[in-house]
Length: 213
Image (tube, rainbow, N blue to C red; front, side, top):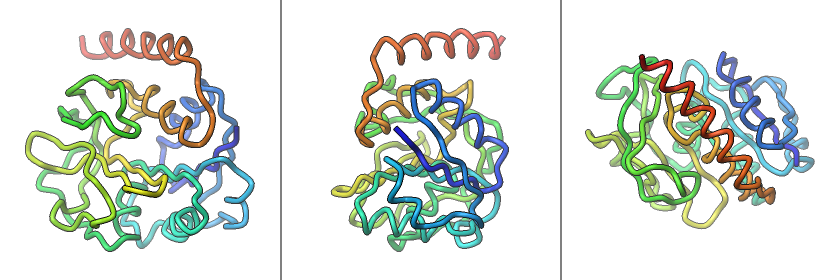
């Protein structure tokens, strides 16, 4: 099970890599200006990471997502990667109503895609000042999660294995991060044993409880 991780020059990339490795995936990490699009055909899925700036300035991220869509390769976008997915299909990324860096929000969701089996609602950690504007979500997508104020936290293509989340699953204060990534790995053809997911989730709940003290 191999995952190509597109690194948008972000400090959280290796937290995501660690989570994926704990779930049994082998990760190949490439900076966004060093990605070879031909490599997409040699992996089981592609994760486009968080990062600074806008999707248009995120190196090859947009081209990677287009290639995945064209070939049916599962792709998962996190934060900036999520915004890049929106841009590829014509959505508008603009200033979010609130700027949040390291803050948590309650997310309400439909239990679909990567959010299947995640508590309803759940706490998510956010680091972003931009967002895909809800009124511009492409018709090909469904919104899978929102905050109480209506900020889009998750989108999922209705036909292709393309999904994104605005928050950070790999944050210790995000509920269900390992389960989300395990759900995505299943889309990539790799089923993580439930016992493994449960053990990792229990460990993170303990860490999160300590962090909130």
